[in-house]
Length: 599
Image (cartoon, rainbow, N blue to C red; front, top):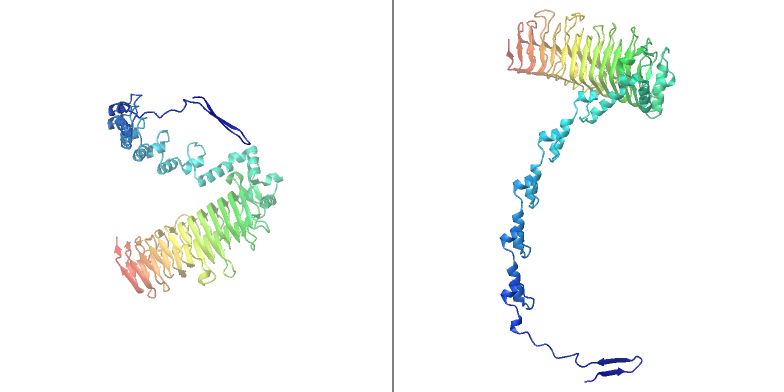
């Protein structure tokens, strides 16, 4: 058959040609022998046969791996069902021992095994504290234990030689101060100059010289400049070998018109002493008496006098707030420190030596009720007054004062160790909420404590003693403690009241409590002369519970109770070595029970 051509005429020409023989009849259907059998399908080796859906399914089923093959994981021809995949995964899961060993690279880890491995690798406390194992893991507790084990003791932090210990912020502060303020640094001119220029100033920079007769003006100029510049340290380093600073007038820790002084007046203790040459007037004055002043610190200062001053006070805070005195020594004082109309004043490691035969005061806290002011929060921490049995008092708290606290106050050789007074009997005008811990009076020439007026005063574990008859004491003292009728809600908890010519306590107050207190070594004036405790007519609501009366075969009675003393409880006390008996008088509405003679 010849070629056939078709031509279309129009705007565009189209020509098609058909060639015979290119289009034929359909292929014949497959014969039965063209299909693979089940065996051929499962064998999967015949390339000529065709597969029906059934045969395809049969081949796939034949290739499914058994559990053993799946778990072995070495056959590269088999197929995996979800079950076999799960079985292989399960077979590869690590045991606890394998997980904890952590050396197998073919096993799988479940969450439990992962947790067990982690737990097995947790460090013990000993391993954590040693800090040498590089394979163990640390829990928050072990981390804290390691840090705690590495914390430096105070002695280590102050020695400044360890390299492996850690320090808390308070220790860092102490260590830095010790490092910066040591005499070795101060004695090195280059180091001294660098430290001072970084932290403040010194009168030496202004030309203060060893030959000057009075350095007070130069010191005040230095302090004024530091305050003006926003605060810092006014340094009083050694002025020259063997030469003291000479103080012929007051040194001021404030500047007129500036509320926040933010100044530290810093010495180096006995290595750079301050010799007070003025006959009268105060030494350090903080506050002008009218305007409040804040943030003044005195540290490492040693002042002394060659002769008896006249009415001179060492440190005076007036309308001063948030101020501190650390490591302060005064030798030859008449009145040590005075706080008036102040708030948050802290004394730490101070020593006031008062050798002169005058009635001075080691520490006075006062606020006159006739004014609109008051004094709040004054803390004495390891504060010593040594009056040398020459006539001065230890601590006097007077007027509208609240929150005087001691944590180690030692009044030695004083006339009166503690006196609480006020010119007013109005409750708001009384010394109040004062707490004395580790308050000690020794060798009081008159009385260890005279508590005239006060509200809610507490004594905890105090040792209050006249030490009557000791060397220099004189033996002319009276009772150890007087509690006046305007003392309200006073508590003595534990501690000891002792060693006096008359009674251990002469009690006239309201709601005074003695809990677990020891009374001893009283009535040294003579056997049978006085009782251990005398309750006067104004005594009200008193309690003696669990106390011990050691009457030393001198006290006539443990308790002498006036008939007008009333509303008391005297219970569970022990007494011994009384001359006559436990009590004389019973007062009014006084309960006495279970008091035992332990002679």
